[in-house]
Amino acid sequence: MNKQPTPRILLAAIRANCLECSGGSRKQVRNCEIKNCKLWPYRMGEDKAKKPKVGAEKYKQITVFDLMEELYDKD
Image (cartoon, rainbow, N blue to C red; front, top):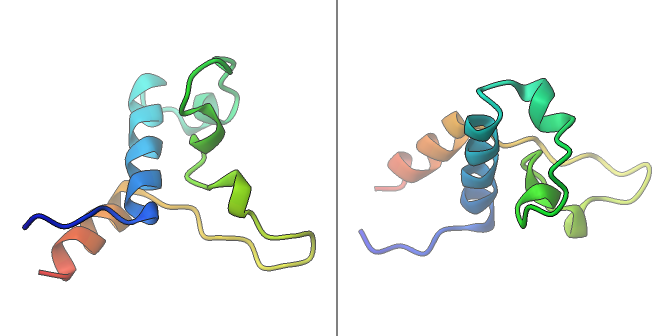
């Protein structure tokens, strides 16, 4: 099981880390003021560089449950 993680899995892992750092508070993650953290731009489970243009459909926010489902359903 030596698979490369997909960008979606990496974003979910970052989101899980941010939730843990904030004591499990989604509101604290959203309002995080630690902008010098390397993970800060990705804390909401989205890649800001690939965010759709105005009027385009938004990317679905990734959760830890999505990550687990993706990892274990492909085996």
